[in-house]
Length: 348
Image 1 (cartoon, rainbow, N blue to C red):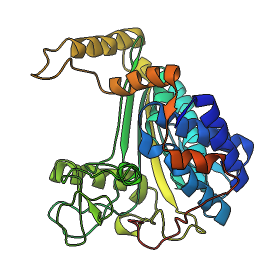
Image 2 (image 1 turned 30 degrees about the vertical axis):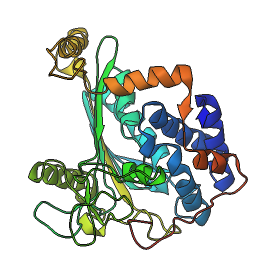
Image 3 (image 1 turned 135 degrees about the vertical axis):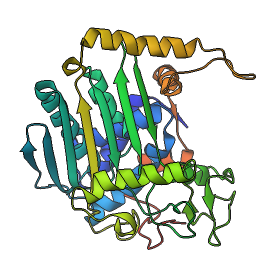
């Protein structure tokens, strides 16, 4: 089903309001979800709405949270989120980080007790659009087998980094597993097999079936393992939150808050040199990457985030393709259709 961005935004916002969110909070969540869809991050787009709606309806996302920003130093703060909508809290924390970095050069703002915050690049691009460098990382469900292990411990623990150029933003948004769980859910919904390098089955053996996944693999073996440890330390242990295997499952009990953590870091280039020169140099990096001699079979080298930029231009013009089943759910009057409230993190 092809749908334009404005219509998709309206359908998502209305569904989340039906579940119990305020119009303002539902609009923020719709902004982040449509952003993900428009840039080809379908695993963090409309396919997630039913899950969010069910969790909101059952009380696992606080609809009127008691939010408190605690300034712990000139460049640091903690946003206490009371398990409110993760995307709303992440946006508020990034806005505060941008303000602090504008005044003091750098900002480190943690979010304590939040729900799932979606595509992190939405928030790091906020910093880049303000002329600053944005870095964000967050905890997620224990789903990944550590390097050399046969059972799960860490989550996919994503990281996003965005930096502004004169004309465009260079950005990446990645899970520290070979592939995000949401991508496997997307492949499952499309009845497509996955590469055997993405995940393992109940026996710890590589699988190509998205329905048999019982553990994900870290990127680049020990290197990805180290990165997911770093994310868990900075967004969990440092904030005094559950960590490692104790991080709550997305599907364990949708009536309970998840108590997740996220860390947003913003750097103001003006405190480290000429900001205009910085923008020019970043733009030069992008241009030089585009002019690198491509490998055989590759049309041209792209800078990080360029594929998503191209997809966004296309979807602005041609609309967004979403799964028919997701569209039918969005236009229905049901809050949710298929319950996500499972005890197994690898929900079937």
